[in-house]
Image 1 (tube, one colour):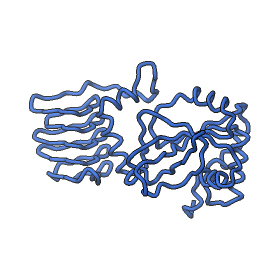
Image 2 (cartoon, rainbow, N blue to C red; image 1 turned 60 degrees about the vertical axis):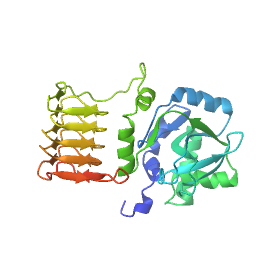
Image 3 (spheres, one colour; image 1 turned 45 degrees about the horizontal axis):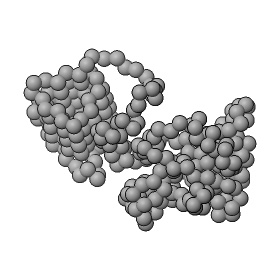
Image 4 (cartoon, rainbow, N blue to C red; image 1 turned 45 degrees about the vertical axis):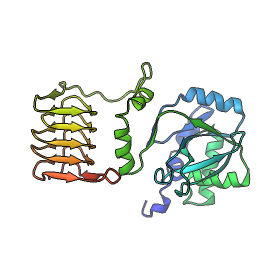
Length: 282
């Protein structure tokens, strides 16, 4: 879009509406690509149908909304779990119900809402249209609380925090379970080699790495080389990056194929991590 205000989910839905109209399924489930959580949608769909609500929304209760989830919307629900408001998180309260951008509704209703939103305003998103309809009490929208691991990755800080949160065994157990398969592209390579000169603590290291230095509380991607005397702390190092001999990194995100070999020290605060661009050499 030449003007960002037109770049909405409704615009994307309209461009692909003919595909939806041809599908035989009665219901649609809309889920975001930037939120990480585990949810049995078959179970949620059955619950939605039994409730008789027009729309079911998924939300997650948090206690740090003043300085997190500021790019998200929050919902209010009454004692019957009916959604009474849907608005942008303005950081004015710690405890909020973060809307997980996940809806279930009949396909016919979804198509109608998309077309109504486009007529109402070309700049409106589906969530904005629903906010208007909630205020008018035109639909019965039910909220369902999600429990378990949840991360919204919508900026660099949240990407950094979500990655490091996976070092917590509780989060690992919740997100990755036997029998709950995650299908992804497989890249086979050698096991990682941890040298006698290394020291590794509280970290996750993918396959194909060579670690000769110190790694503490960090996520290390596939095929990363960490040189002798190097120290990597509180950092996320993506695939095939190289950390040179004697280099110290603290609270950094190093993108794929980047090399930090001549700059000997990069240190940031954890609430504002540094970033090394993909394929750069420092």
